[in-house]
Length: 204
Image (tube, rainbow, N blue to C red; front, side, top):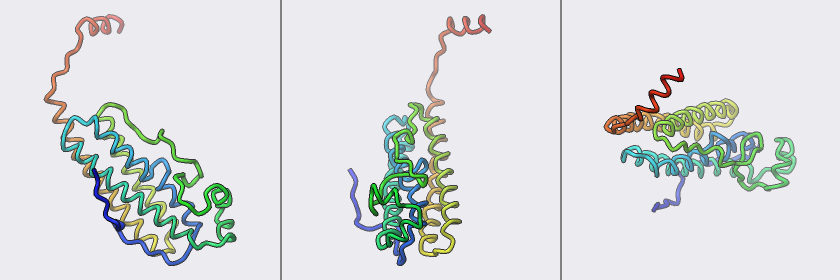
């Protein structure tokens, strides 16, 4: 159960339309390293997490990623809401506009629609958390690229810097969660079938 506060996690007030920037920023909405993929990944992985703190971290960060999804969608919306047809065409968004108008649609900057293939769930807590650590670093790197591309728009850069900072915090929390999972798994006893091990040794 979630309680929704009807306010953005960080204020966004973009005054001027710029669909050129919206075209690249939308990748953090529905792209491979975007907020939609992150939120679904973490909120799905939490069910099989064997350690309670790690489960709570996945739940907390997955929930925050939904807030970030709302923020990225707001950026894209404000950058396109009052754009002229000429600005949309010049930004290379004619195809997008044909299918979606100026609605916010989950896709990458390259125009590839969101796919569940972005959601990594291996059924192994260590593998999942390692994937999450990598995901946060990839998201950080993407935000840094977007900051470079949006360098002339201080209103957009301000929000992107906030989102980048949160990716760093998430990376740190996942690292702590991974340590807790390692400790939890170290308490378990793993038994190896000696017969199978002998067969493996003979084959070697």
